Image (cartoon, rainbow, N blue to C red):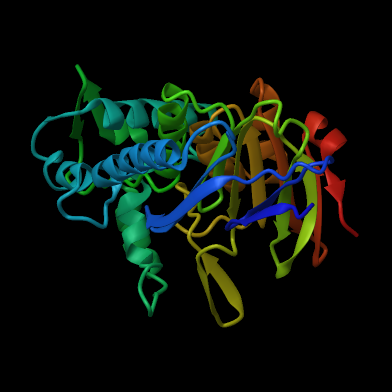
Length: 336
């Protein structure tokens, strides 16, 4: 039978069947959260109308989260916080409260490598514009004063900034959270086998229908049409952070969007980090944290966290090399 092949930003997932029974997923793709979001349902016992209805509900959940977390939208809740939390305490809804508390935890366990207060520095780089710029050292140093979770006052489910220049940026965790929320909608409507992918932030749930039939393929970060290898995954989440996703090159130097909160400049020690975890929120946030920490400290963090695995690709002596956590190393099939 023909395999079902789904291309996504950072990995490729192939679902195939060893028998003559062809798995025909019902799926839809929309542009949301500044990327392609695909929802695939593999359950074979429901009508097209039932599947269309539940997918629509899942997309609406993602849309609701986007309206809260999109800092490019002046009408979003995060934009309101960034405008006014320097002057007064803002009451948080359940989504924003959960994201901030979770981000605080990732900040703590990563020694500051993950920090949602990076927004004031990130806006200097303007990666989303046609003509991105390299901000001067003076500007970066000035804005770094606004970076750090110590600048957030979180009390009684309200938030206030201790400095007026603090800006939140949830780009390293919101997509994962939205994927988890969409999966929950599917489960609430008795979907047992599905996948949600938001630009490389992926979560899958499975039944006997697809058990043992999914492979996660990791792209070669320097050759977009080739792959570094693959591993099998039935249920769980995967996210990849790489220096090839949003970047520009100036004077032969690659400047990418994953900034080190301590320097305000692109983190340089990794090329690609793939995290496998139970939830997409965890995989999304940790892929950024590990990327910033680098191969050694990043893998130390992964090894301390139960249920978390990683593949880290980095440059050594001008060549790409990789290391993997213990369990994922057993499953990862490298392509030479």
